Structure formats: C-alpha cells, structure tokens
Image 1 (cartoon, rainbow, N blue to C red):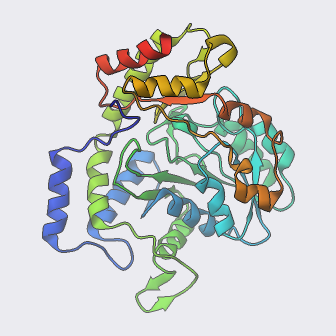
Image 2 (tube, rainbow, N blue to C red):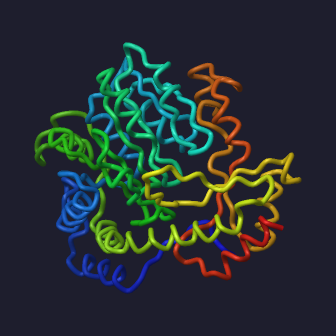
Image 3 (tube, one colour):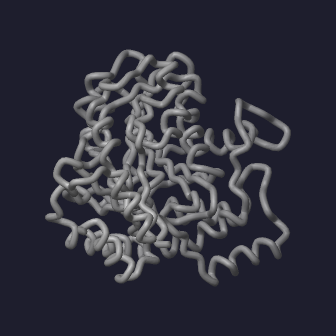
Length: 368
C-alpha cells in the first residue's frame, strides 16, 4: 500500500530516544526538561521568532495560544470552516464563540473578503489555517486585523517550513501553532508547538501547559497538563534538522504529479500562490464528476484498489458538523465555497518516501 503519509525515522531518532531513556529524565513538572528546551530553541530559530513553547498536541497549542491571548467568555474568534475541527473546538474550550468564515476556492484558505463582513464588536481574534501546507493570504488578513485591533493566531499544523514572501509561517501573526502528529511533515508521534515574538504570551503558555503553575507550589491561573515529554522532544529535535530536506522532496514529488496530471479533464491540480513555498502536507486535487466521468469517492475507491491510500480532508465543513449545527444553527448554503470544495477534494500521497514508481502508479490511476 502506498500510504497517504509516512513518518521517516532513522538511526539518529533511535539514538536520541535511547539517550533520553538512559538519562532517566523523562519529563519535568514545568514541561521544560533539557530536550524540550533544546527543541524549543531550535524550533524558534528555524521559524524566526524569539520564543517557542512545546506542548503535547497541536490542539493543546491552539488552546494554549488562545488562552494566552486572553480569549474568553463573550468573545468571538473567526475561523475558516474548511479545517480540522480542533481549530474551532479550542475556541469553545476557551468559552468563546467560533464564527465561521468561507474560503477561497482555489487555495482552500480563509477568504479575507468574507472575514471582513463578519467582524463584530465582539471579535477578538482570527485563526487563519495554512491548509495542506499552503500559506494563507496573510497580508490581507494582517491588514484586516490591524484595522480592527485583532490578534492573529496562525494554525500551521500542516505547514511546517512553508514560506510566504521569504518568511516562515508561524512568524507572521501574534502566535503560530504547529502539530507533530504522526502524519505531519515532521513528527514526534504526538506533540505541538507555539511560536511567538511576544514574551508575555510565551510565559502564559508555559504556565498554561502545567496547571497554571509559576513554580511547583503556586498556581497563578487555570491551566492543563499539556507538557511535552522528553522522548518526543528528542524525536522533534532530530526531525527538525531534516525538515528542509523533507520539504525539497515533497515539492519535487508535487511538481512531478502536477506535470503529469495537469490537463486531465475534470481534475484540477493544486493552485500554488505566487511568493510561497508550499509545504505539501498532502497533494490535493479537485474532481468534477461532470467532466471526469466518475465521482471523487469513486476515484478514491479506484486508487484504493490499486494500492494507493487517498484521503478526503475534509468531507464536511466544520459549521455543518452536528455540534455546530446545534450551537450555531448553521445549515447548508451558509458557506458555499467551502461546501462545494468539500464535495470535490481528494488528497494524494506526496511524502518523501515515495519513489518515482509510486508516483507513476498514482498518475496512472488518476489520468486513466
């Protein structure tokens, strides 16, 4: 089976984990053991910010960043509906209300024009998602945020190393949030990171990840157990050193697929914005049944029969999930661009383990 994503782990990762196990130090009450601190410092340097705070998931990163920005009851936070549910769920966890924005149908990212129309006096923040590894239109989002005094928290869970006009995602807003889940461009199994130039925000996030403790005997504010273990940090430190190589391979694989799939009637290859380095977490096409002849789901089944794992991210926009239908009374037709895209997207493997023969199998099925 050609999997949709595969972590790449070698002897360096095994050695780093063995060294942590041999040390006998697996975690720290503050979440800041020596390997965690090393990973944080390296990740901050890579992204180009002053501070990075390691946590135990991408969801924890979003929750911690929102809380550190002071998001709470009565606030509204604008999020795209075409995303993983955690982007909105963490707003609810803070006691705030997620307000869903539509997307640009080509890039799949949040539509700044739609955002402008849904800002209210209660709006406190916008969470643009760099979907599938492509940076959102941050220039427009930042201009909008500045005009209304809003915080920008980047959801970069799928976009490690992506560039927008020479700057890394995670350095563009007040905070950036990354995931190191097993399928991501670099992985610690589970894990996450908050990046920021705001020292106060970083300090609050560090307390938040450890029950709100400033020291072992004092809880200053509400917090959770969001610490990253030392073993995960060791994996992350080694993986970080390999990230640019992974991205070069992903972009090469994406270019190979685009060259051979461009022109297939009924299939749109990924649109890549000018001035970006796409991280290509996955290679996402859109399928038009009228032109292609079969549905997206039928193509997915054909790929599976040929030994290719293709995935649908995401078949249901978040505003149409049962929880948000109940809470917000949302319905079909509210956000038409996202709803249309959700019925057509299909993500193909593009990860560094793929051989040219693997890519040719994918092309052969899609191109017919």
